[in-house]
Image (cartoon, rainbow, N blue to C red; front, side, top):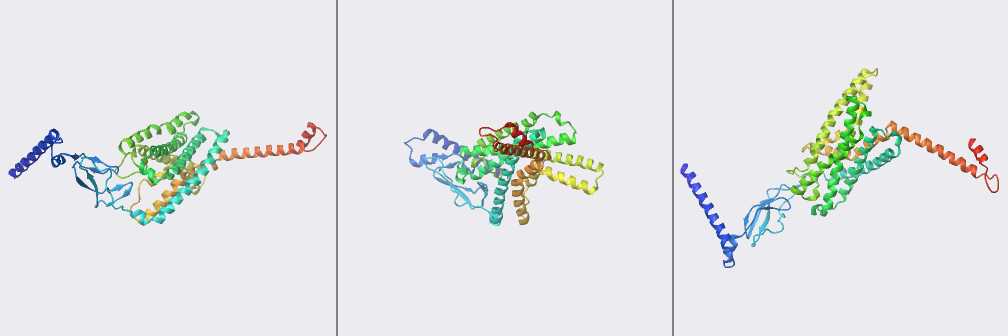
Length: 415
């Protein structure tokens, strides 16, 4: 056994020595006077990776190198039992393009559920359109109704703003052509970066909502002592370094496909997804504490047990979209079961695209302060309009050929 090992070691040393001699000969003796055959043996292609990410090892010139097809290409799963090819040319350089023509995509999901994916896409577009419409109306209401600008409603206003910006950027991403996506244009990467920034700000403003409610309800801290600039800093400024770090990581390690879409084995997106997951987990704790305190207060009241549970459930359902807890349902794919996959597709598309609509309805359109302010503004407009009509009628009654008496207008408006 020992002699066998010694024999293998001797062979390995001999091969290494011969390789060193050949390399020295190539470096010192590679000149035009050498024969083409010798020069050809001295040239090789260095190890490299191509645009897909396949690693091509160091190879002698004039060879066709074979590698297994990658598991994923552009987010699509491929059959790894087939092979891709790339030529190491005679001059010691790799061919510009690798040959992936033999690689076969595996599209079970899209082949199994083509109709469901199309319907889900329609739901996504419809939900985002309705959400943007409702969010814009809510934004205008918060902008115009200055009488309701307390800290709580300012937080709602900022959250609605992030939803609008996020949804608008989502539409811009859908308009990007596939060829531009593949060419990895700088402006395309910029759009993806801005979109991800608004995604992170959206979740951080949900966190701000959770902080405010938890402070006011659970900690019973006076909301008058809370500072607006602290919440503005958390919601708009903290996401900036997170996205900058993500963009730098993408630029140096995953600079492809406009930085959009996550593939297995690539972890740069966790630079911004990690803080988002942490924020959602904290909001889940906030929700638990808020509902616990609410149940304690309801039990102390004289209302019946059924009404107590009904109020608790209602409060929980209202808080779910505000705190972003619904996103926690999408962390784990349900698996290969057909029914669970279809339910997951529809559930995911509906809740994510309509979340902005739910936030607008619960925290603007059904907000008592907003409705009261709108009602007052409407009554004021009606009174002003009625006064203008009376004045116009009074002005239209001629009391003299040249002018109208102010006394007659006053009498008319007093009627």
